[in-house]
Image (cartoon, rainbow, N blue to C red; front, side, top):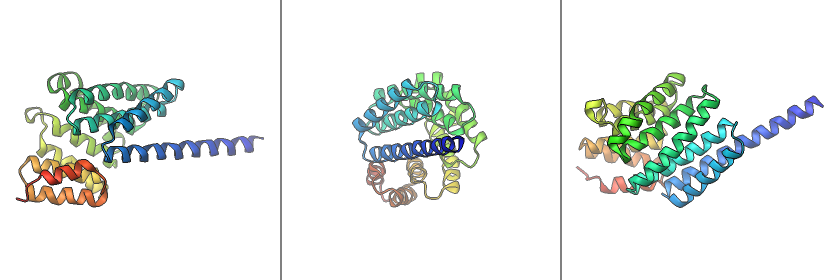
Length: 234
């Protein structure tokens, strides 16, 4: 009987992991297409599911990830208010996940990402209310998992949006982006942000190389296509 229960528990756990992987894959595809309505539908559904099982940290974590994608696409589409709303909602979900289980590095990575997304959406209030929280969460994520390419990428994005006089800016962000690529050379997002940072520094030829590399790894990423199209050859 105990053996059967263990097997059943294993099957259920594997099914949960499979569903989570499928959901993440769906979010990536929606993000690539900049399908904001689709992302918002997923985020709302995942948050509703988390509310039904409020003691499951992974439920809040999945909702937080979805809202980070909504905020990301809203910024790409230049809707700062929408980006701020999504980021603040997701940050609340990420904090609930951490309160339930503070030993998962990626929970901090997602919280730091969401807090960081508020800053470009609302720079003054964002830096005051979310800047420190973003840095602390991302530093914690890297401390807990120094081999996480995603954590270094998120750390770099946070620094990219911080003013230079607060230790941010493209030059400082680039160190994190390069480390993200060193840990995962096939990270299309890391190459995308390297391109964006290089473009900001007016290194257009190198920026185009990085953006092209990003699109080779993820040909469907509309934002990368737009950035490459807008980057001069020289």
